[in-house]
Image: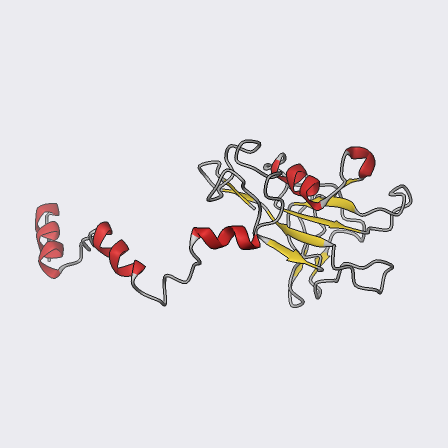
Length: 200
């Protein structure tokens, strides 16, 4: 059987093979009323959960996506370290890190290499007993995942301290002494979308 292009198009059109997209305005209105889809809090509630308001602002970071100019970040985890181990960059008090807000700012200033951060006691020799900041490009992996990297074709990261393997693990708590939980330790995400908008 032989079909011309015109015949094939006619057949496809008649059978409905060309899907017609729904009117986006109707879809948006219907989605807004659907409690299974519209699960997000109102922008006014952002401020209740945001940390570093007045420091991580849209004036300081013009691409920051926050409902008010006061800014702040809501993608954080108090008391746990959800960061990974790839491309770690340690910043100490002498580097200007005196709070979690300084740590978040350091990540926002490095969108090409940082997607997550942690402010905690890292127990390194030169941190003078203070909490420090570590920036990463990947988060903690789940326990059932281990990644091995092709270092020959990778760029932007140094070899991992434990060798060329990132093994998943339970997310560690931030601690004051290695065992006692530190409720002021905190970690979180920062991402930049294809329009260069930043979220934290």
